[in-house]
Image (cartoon, rainbow, N blue to C red; front, side, top):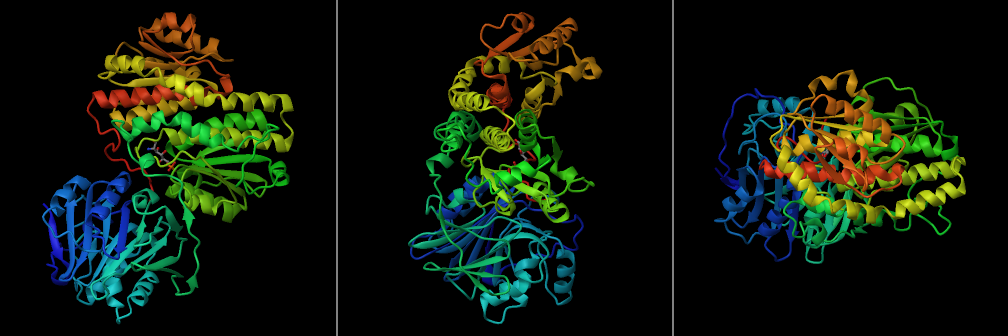
Length: 635
Ligand code: M6R
């Protein structure tokens, strides 16, 4: 049920002591102050574009002459839209929030925006306030009554407790007491036409338009209003009115923050006629690779990575590369390791960022640390990066898809993946963008270290330029994949096998399938199968094998025979004209033959399509799978 709360007369519900722990949030926020245009519709549309960040409850707060009206609803934004439908729509200042909770059930009371007990201060928060228990205890001892289980509700109450009539000063005083990560959007009943934003370890961007100012967790939420954006730094606060945006540090020191013009347009951030964002993003991959290559390969076949930030001398001085990442980005890291070792002859390892940050790695200033992250905000990857910098003085390089993201800003050097906004929770085009970045980096390092002949560099860059057309042809397998999906959509589980650079592709195929279809799937190096998983083989467990031509083709073909000998059902990804594996397989999906070194970029495509089709047949929510969020900004 919706709750329409007038913040100047907010009904206070005492839910009693906190019993269920911190409501960790990983959410999207938006705010807007407009000169004349009502903001309700804009906030709702912005929230829809932020929905990928979390979608278990949502709310908006809008300012009217009678006070600030808050509407909150459990579930997706469309339920909030229905709830807002009957309210007046003419307010010109407002904030909104879409929430994803890992603890504490999604409920109207836990949904944002939250309001101070005196009904004057309203806050939408993304992140986690680590010291909220202490803060809450202190506020409760002064008679403040809380309405939710969230950590976030301390923020409006803290601001209200510091309120002496100067709104920015009250926010600043509260910020000084907060520990943890946060991006907030704040409104005050006594200060109409003002929204204050602040960030620490959570993204927040200000949008500048001629007739309004906005803020949001993600640029896509503001693109319909403006492309001119200011990326706040950690420790920045922004005070927005309809005509102005002023920036300061938490301590009040004024700062100038340059605006940048975002090149993504709205159409690109929307579905463009595809049934799901994921499908659209799979089909965008040829374009993603073309975009990533623009300007990256010079006329002499040299690799130009504008923002790499590390001189050739530094690249030569490195004796080891260490890649940290999570999920799909970790898989891209595994493929990149293969290229780094092959092209640049540099020892490389790949770590889960969540493991790296707590173990005792051996590294120093001769280690190159590569942090791969689509969002550039993943908490574990960011923590691993910071650890490598501070504890080991490692040289750091980010591979990121989001301009201005924290990881992008904190690395010594950066390679942007240019995949555009990825809305589907399951990463597809960002993975391909990461592979291209990893390939280019490996070539760049090889050039600096003199480990590849000019002829080999020319050959590899020529091949790389052909990847968009190969991916486009791989997408033509969609009909065959749909048939295969129909035949396996009720299987009890899946095994994905690959070798060499295609072993991480097998891992990625399995991850895609389990994320969006909720079916168990495991990725394995094909040669390892006989050391355990072979016991699983029977008719009910389809085995998807990447068996394209290359140095390990014969080995993979033998593994396929092992599966067949035990009555297993093989779905093989093969090149045209394949006769050995195809004869053994129950179904084949054909992809164009490429240089084996580049084959991961092509072979992943049918696996993405397979996951998509199986999930669709099973009626799953493809773009917003249960329990997952796009950007994991808390540990
Ligand atoms: O934004 P990041 O690349 O740092 O995110 C890492 C993982 O959370 C992400 O790849 C996740 O595994 C995706 N849901 C995979 O589809």
